[in-house]
Amino acid sequence: MSDLTLHEASVPVFVATLGNMKAWLAKAADREAMLMTAALAPDMAPFPRQYQMASDTAKNALARLTGTDAPSMPDTETSFAELSDRCDRTIAWLRDIGAAALAGAADREVEIRFPNGMGYRWTGRTFLVGYALPNFYFHATTAYAILRHNGVTLGKPDFLQHLGPPNLKA
Image (cartoon, rainbow, N blue to C red; front, side):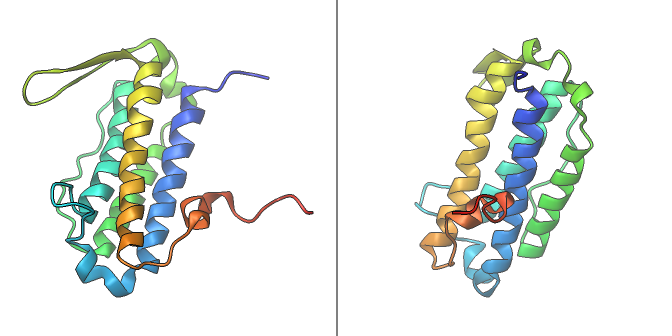
């Protein structure tokens, strides 16, 4: 048995969840207008921002790990169609990143600086498992929670839709 690679722990995970998130939009289509401003709390970012941040986290994580530039995606989405397109563009970019592009990334230094000058420095492995994946799932889960809170019929099978039907019989 081999060790899990950074590619296996990132690209398929981001792609699957962004695909699931795209599918949630279809289930929420009848509430689109209201959801474009919905948030769980007054000090939380609204629904579209959760999609934008999930996309940004995935593409920026892989850019940092590969030492490349992520595609620019201005946060201007004002409709489900635009959020869906952003998911598609992010997924397409992620799928183009092969395992070889992440060779040596586990030990690559990754640094993030905030506007106030503070920040973090990690190895690539620690960055992915300690920051990028949790941050990505924070935004995906918050988007899911906003949908559920606003009456969209979603369940755990929607969050894990990428698994498909069970492959074991009773």
